[in-house]
Image 1: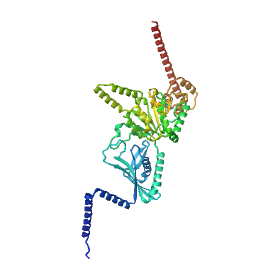
Image 2 (image 1 turned 90 degrees about the vertical axis):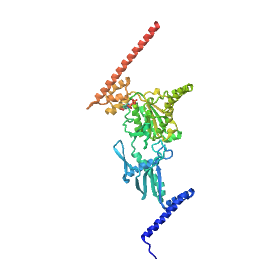
Image 3 (image 1 turned 45 degrees about the horizontal axis):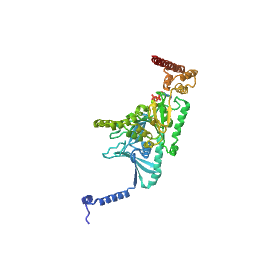
Image 4 (image 1 turned 135 degrees about the vertical axis):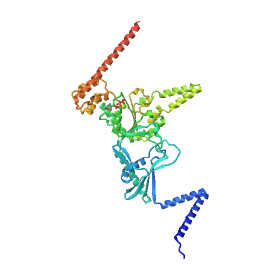
Length: 494
Ligand SMILES: Nc1ncnc2c1ncn2[C@@H]1O[C@H](COP(=O)(O)OP(=O)(O)OP(=O)(O)O)[C@@H](O)[C@H]1O
Ligand SMILES: [Mg+2]
């Protein structure tokens, strides 16, 4: 038998490959699509038969993509902890107000984990398609992040029944341990767009030092508020039982400098909630408001400061009704069109009904465990519908400094529990109206070294001044009333 040379073997193999490719090309071109589909299915089945590995994908946003997947979030936290030791390519984020670096897995990075002697692979992926549709949300079908877990099929039960449970539990635990509370503010609409769409909220670390211990107010009222908050935070079962969404509205009202913002911070510190400071004037319309709401996590306080200044909540509804009637009456088509355009411009603003929907519409129950707080200096200006019980469940008035409030401030600012000058201050506070902000400012040491007497005397001086001013103002007023009365009497004689 003649031995074949290497050249001949290569030539033989080349012609076989060429023949296979030719048959495949013919198959692709002339074979009916049903047959081709069957062929592809079989080839996939054959490849799966040979591949002993199973992969599970965990997408960041699933379904309608309104809410971030909690499973993805748990895995992210879990891997953030593990990846800093196992991954080679990491990305660094600054956290805790710039004090710490948070290392997490870079996109497209892979790590290998060993769980009870079983090898598993995690990979972070991102699917970017050239889909032409524009999505509103931060992460959409065009830009979807996901994790892929790969393991040998013989470990299927271990992974699905034990390992994934372990990952979620650890992720949740790490989240609680590393929780840095945040203060959010809503971005202007324009900055939501772009290729890498930004979130609707920006945040900084929340580090306000105000607590209920440092708040100057009537101790009985303070205890009532603290009890109310604690009952709320533990009330998940109760709210579910009575069929109410797990949220509570607080209306804080009173003159400037009486501690409304300080109380919001104290609430957040007591319950360890995040704070979402909603700037209504940056929200273009009701739909945007709804979308902002959906992004808010649970365990949070949504605060709208100076609600009376944010919107014309008093007149908007009535004005709108009036305008509609006027439109019906308008006969001139040009004027009618102009009015219509004006009305649609107005429609792109947040309305009272939009805000009511935000507070207790169907969407407001998403997430749960939220406080909604309004603050205002002019409670009388607000539409009664906005602050009725059930929406704003608790109305809290913060007022001028009382003696009990002063004692808290003296303790905060001077470390002082009692002093002979307290009696004078008590009687002066009884006769005057000074806000806790002013009392605090007057108590604060202005020179170094400082002494308690000087600080207390500064306050006494300021209180006496306020008392004098109030007295002379009252005298002026009674003088002008007397003058008016004299004028009326004179004119009635004539
Ligand atoms: N009740 C209070 N207890 C302790 N400190 C207070 C209190 N009220 C005011 N202060 C002090 O005065 C400062 C201003 O108070 P805060 O901003 O809470 O007032 P506000 O009622 O929100 O005022 P505005 O209506 O102008 O927003 C605070 O930083 C705090 O130091
Ligand atoms: Mg304030």
